[in-house]
Image (cartoon, rainbow, N blue to C red; front, side, top):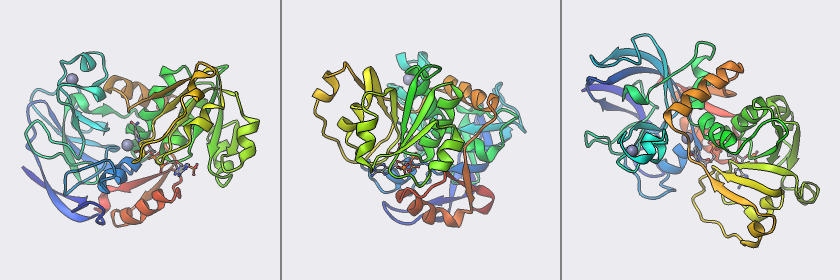
Length: 346
Ligand code: NAP
Ligand code: ZN
Ligand code: ZN
């Protein structure tokens, strides 16, 4: 075991504080990573506050990890010391179930293991990226392409793949009108990726406060959803809408913005259920779908895609002692557009 410094929530809703945790010995197929940067995802906050249900404490959140390999096990073939690598929301899965075999490890039915707030195959709780080092099976470690700096690459490991996967799956591309609801961590990556895929992109944000940024990120249009005229003007407009909102929304109102046959894909994970009048789906043969992160191979594809298009995330780099303040800012939609922890400050 190796003792490493980390930031942890000692209990639900308690502020995060500096502590130490134990990392397992590097096994035959393990990679030891010196973590350089860790993104703050809104999912970290949902879980640290037990908003999704009972969680494991102390909790070291963080599933947007970028760093450098510092040791590999004797059986490791995919990574070597000095490689620039990333880890996302998954650190293990059964590798045998139908989903694992289809490259959908995030839906493993045989014992997938989350990067934190989960129990690993060794029976110990997993701890995430707000820490100095992590030991991960080589199959769950991604290559960060040379063109991407590690700090702006870190958020791609969750925000990037969570938007890339549904945008690809639902056909965002040339000739398609795509709207992204919510310009936060996921939303700003959704805009960049949908634009890079060639779609005509509209941001649907609560206000026009971030309009200039949205247009610079690649949006063609930008509307405030607080203005009821937005819903009249955009009725029947979009082929695809991606909701990245962390709170319950009136999905019926957003479904009215789809063309006939259009799809609203939700990736937001609010803590409360929503009510929906199903006539908003029946009229116009519309689809309401969900999507959860993405598999390992697709995550690598996404990293290569972003590097190929020359972009990472827009980040605000913070010191570890600013994590609690950053959480407050995320909760008040005051993030531009991902907080990333410089783990040298832990
Ligand atoms: P974030 O940075 O806080 O962004 C969410 C954005 O939603 C905010 O910036 C805000 O954008 C908008 N918003 C917030 N509250 C709202 C409200 N009450 N009404 C309307 N809009 C509101 O969060 P994130 O890290 O992108 O994560 C977003 C959600 O996705 C979270 O629930 C997270 O847990 C979930 N998530 C899901 C997956 C998955 O696999 N499906 C993966 C990662 C995260 P504007 O200011 O532009 O309105
Ligand atoms: Zn996340
Ligand atoms: Zn599986």
